[in-house]
Amino acid sequence: MRILAIAGSLRRESHNRRLLLAAAELLPPGADFELFADLKAVPPYDEDDDLVPAPAAVARLRTAIAGADALLVATPEYNSSIPGQLKNALDWASRPLATSVLRNKPVAVIGASTGAFGAVWSQAELRKVLAAAGARVLDVELAVGHAAERFDELGRLADESLREQLQETIDALLAATQPRAIAVAA
Amino acid sequence: MSTTVDTTIDTPLLPAGTWTVDPVHSQVAFAIAYHVGTFRGSFAPVAARLEVGADGEAKLSGSASVSGVKVQDENLAAHLQAPDFFDAERTPEIAFASTAIRPSGDELEIAGELTIKGTTLPVTATGRVGEQRTYMDRPYFGLELRAAIDRTAFGLLWNNPLPNGEPALADEVSITAELFLTRA
Image 1 (spheres, rainbow over the protein chains, first blue to last red):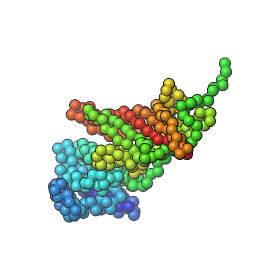
Image 2: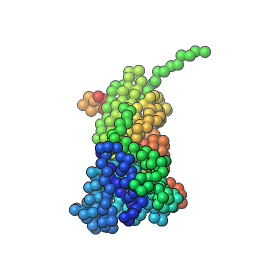
Image 3: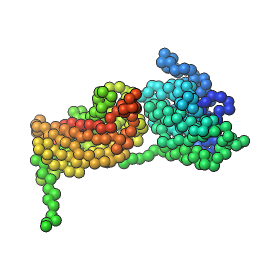
Image 4: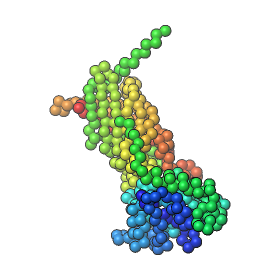
């Protein structure tokens, strides 16, 4: 089991990266966690550059997604939406659309913001983008508002209720990676 | 007052026997209003089996592959197969099984259960029976079914609002099944 985590903000002290690292601590034994570190290196999407081989950072992104059983994406909120570089990276990952590495990939979206609402509008937009790309987007939301005050000195979520919600999100994501038989009437 | 109910189903329109489908000349198609136009596609291959007893009692069952959905754009075909719509990875087929077939004027009324994306709901189709012919001692005929369903009842919820707030894609979908049936 391999979970690929992508933080939508780039800065070193990103609250969303901290949120993903807090999530990593809640994974069960045997589940591998990888934090994608190259988001900043992904070039602006240009169909003229969407060739084989892909730009190096794009190839690393696509390989990381393809090798993961599920994605956990944490996004901040910029102007009521997702950061441009995160959208740009997903645009690269979603090509070619019919056969992309995002297709059928289980994804959970979470988010942190310094405001009161925890990036809920951004999370909604991110779920929409991922679903349009063909991902298996979980119907979950984790809104960490006032993010600057939410983590303890060890990087864990200080709030018990938020920690439980994060655990439920992770459990749902892990469950979504399991094959699920649905009976089809003959 | 008698409590006896006559359950004999009289379907003189359907010829007796067991009939299977010629998949190359059969299709299950859909049409749905999109903006000011109609979005159409089909599912292939189709499997179906019709059994008509000597007493006229008939049963139709069939399925069609969602993985083989065909529309005029490969990206839209991929979107239809995604979890947003049919989720072909987990539910690769749609299926139908009749519960009652009875004449309705010159046509048939076919009640049954339709399964899409793991949800089974009752649906009633109208059926038109074509002329029966025979080639090399094997009889065959065409059967065309039409039904209308609400896609949202089956969990196919995707939509995008237009600038005026109206949804881009309708909820009601018309489904047609054109079956080329050959006696097994």
